Length: 284
Image (cartoon, rainbow, N blue to C red; front, side, top):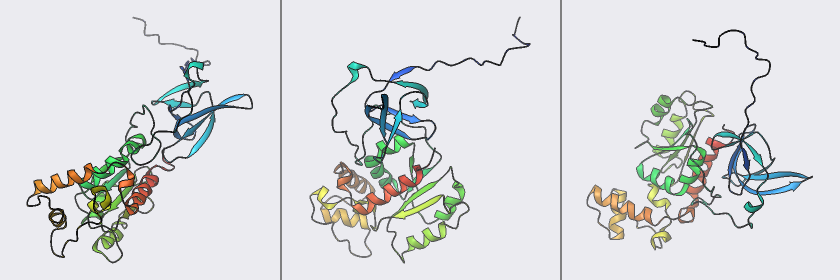
């Protein structure tokens, strides 16, 4: 049997012929050199050369010359001029629930090592409903902590670093609160500084980050001190509230009234966007 062992000419390695892919609007490409990922928003001629403008999920744009050096669905391609039949009239881009430009036919990116941590399952479901499309495009996973009492220990176990960052969203993060002291102590964990960002909203529970108007209310019910907050909210709304199943159904009704970012309070919107930027800007 001849295994082909012996002298070989390696002076001229075999060239790989990349597939020619005509550029098209909304096509998601990654520039290999810079790592910039975006959807094609327009193609034009500049100095006799075809160039394309890519827009990422934050609305930032960059212009690239067509050719080599791009990935499509994770594979290298040779981007060429659009086919005449592929030219369509410009239209307003579709938007995701978070308000960013929707990337047509986008495939979820392989998950990064970095994570977003939120306090509980309801927080995770709300973030997923509004920012889910953006997070899948960026390869960011949201995980519920089910409480932050031992946040420092959780960060220590995670082992954060430059390529393994954490963005943490904490309920009721106000100066002087128990939560603020927990957050301050958590940042003493090894590797946390520069690689962990802890932010928070002022609400007792993430339910309150949903605008009352989304439920047809002028304001959320006031819950007396010492009463369980979720139970008190449901009672104030006149909804069933006597057991955990009632609480779960109540949250389902509230979440069902959230359609886009416009149904959430700005104090939550800004913090989630801040965390996503922290995990993705400059990341490869």
